[in-house]
Image (cartoon, rainbow, N blue to C red; front, side, top):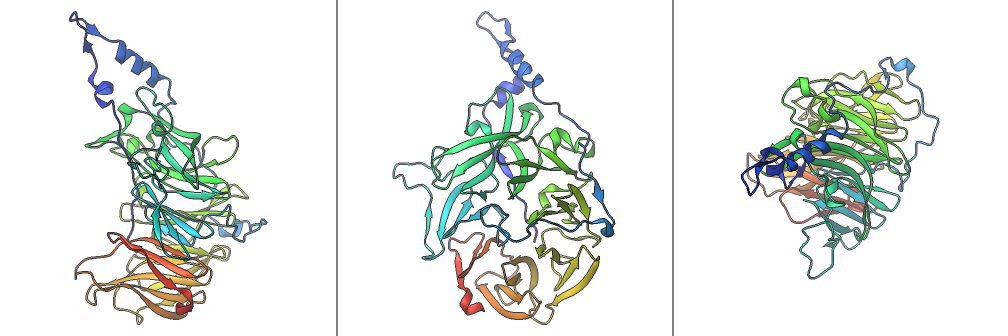
Length: 428
């Protein structure tokens, strides 16, 4: 059950860019608007169709270097592995910030109450001046007391003629301030995909230890010859603080689908799958200490069905597999972690985790149940945790939000209005 995350960019001025000349009052053609647009377009960064240079790739596990830096989790700076969401979410000390279609909802961890971040009675919640609006984003990430997202810059600053610009935007936890930190991409409107709603761009990203790691598709990409147009289909990183330009970590292989890519991070490593159209692929990790990419010798796995625990990779080989495997990159050893064939007759999907539990999401259309099989970190069965038993046979329920803190497991099934809370004292 893989998930795609896309950012929809609706733009004004499409007709101006694509229509060419206009007639003046005396009947002569007025080239001024077109000339101005061309001038701006000619000044943007070069549109390249070849892959930029990435980091060195190490395939021999014997050459992997063990990390020397602290590998323990740090709340203020690290990727929040215990919070997963299709549309983006971030954990605060006593609440969650959840992106619901571009509006930030706040979930109170103690009372379980939910409210919109904006409290203005006369607000339409339709533009970035609203505290709850993260304009045209595809997720949020927490870092040192602020939220970060990648947005279309015209919602923060005046738009440039004929140009779409994407930037890292920092938003305060109150939502009252939204500041552009730095640009990551500048594209001519005429080079973008055009849909009925305007221009579209696909992008996914995470934050870890002061860097934003991201991959995007931007441009009229219709075949592999244009695969890297505007720097598309490459994994980049950019520092959130201070100076620094986008840095290419790894160009994806032509034919890969960045919409299926799931990134995670732990300690000194950033993990990602080079996924194909069927959402299967091989796993890589970027070693931030040695500044190289290390390719795992695991074969193809389900692109979004893996997690990392203390440097070892827990994964499923297919989306509906009942077996979980554990792979140690430093020894190149794979072992069976858990066989859940006898635990349920349903279909197995996503894997989630917290500090001491594994949660494997299942749906059983015959029993009309959506639930988790809960395991400990040794792979032993703990219990079954039912989320829903009210959906029709033949359907599948998409889990759009999962989180686990000290007291609760919190879940949200897409299409419903309530967030489900499970006391961890009952589970454990």
